[in-house]
Amino acid sequence: MDFHRVCLFLNECRIRGERSVLVTVAQVEGSSMRNPGTIMGVAKDGSFEGSLSGGCIENAVVAEALDVLKSGEPRVVRYGSGSPYLDIRLPCGGGIDLHFCVLDADSVAGDCLGSIRGREPFALSIGPDGARFVPDWQPTHFDAEQGAGVFGHWPTLQLQIIGHGAGIGSLARLAREMGCWRSIFTPDSQLIASLKKEGFHPSLLRRRTQTDLLTSDPWTAFVFLFHDHDWEIDLMQRALELPHFYIGAMGGRKAHAMRSEALTARGVCEEQIATIRAPIGVFHSSRDPDTLALSTLAEVVRTYHQTDFEAALG
Image 1 (cartoon, rainbow, N blue to C red):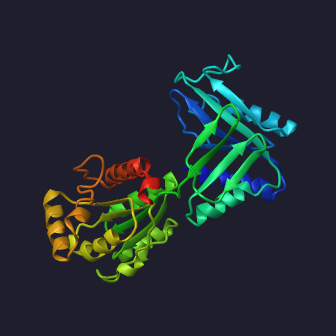
Image 2: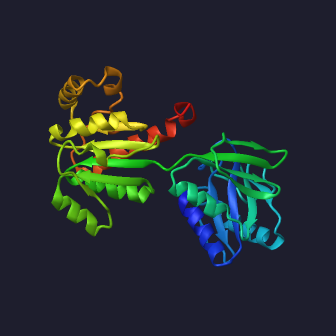
Image 3: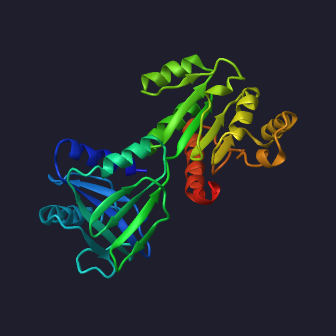
């Protein structure tokens, strides 16, 4: 989820009138820390944003990028297994091909930022001529012989956090650290005041039927953290109607059975109710807010990466 930060870094270089280097993971052989399409940005002073490994090749990547900056010519370099750099090895034993290209006044990073902020799918195309922004999502593929490929990117995971209690703040903080988009809805005015001091922008739920506040897209996860489950029903019914890839709710099996009965009485079909993750999280019976937040976000992120959005969007 650091694609956004790298694009910001590269775009800031462009705004300052400085050339920079876009480094893209083009192909992976065997095990690797990062997937094809992962990017890193390197400035002319050697500063960089992003990570392409566990730290074992970053210094070499920066040195290569500065050399590319001098030559101005794009190149693909192999690190790890099969690399000409015998002194640079990946502990996982795999190999990784990186594409380097110079960005001058190119709007590539800025165009990517536009789609990221607009929550629109897009793709990044790389080749012997450099990098190009593609305004539509395309399946990831790379042709090693041509040294060219395209890498599709879906919008960043968005969390709609709805509920009350300390778990709201814990999940919001963890999601912020992960770079997730987030919206917070709670009927607790004291919690809202506390979260605002931390730089969050929560919305006050004045009544249980205030479902118009909820907005979403296919890359949205709804997380319900209510102790008073009567607050959930109207909001959850609306969430089930909206686009989403995940919906989960706090509470044990007894609470979920009562929730399911209430939703059924509202006319919600059994298939929709079956999609609700409850009890929420990858491990259950979490008693403290921070553990609950970790368990919840782990399940949400795992589901995001396992979802076939191309098939889901038809």
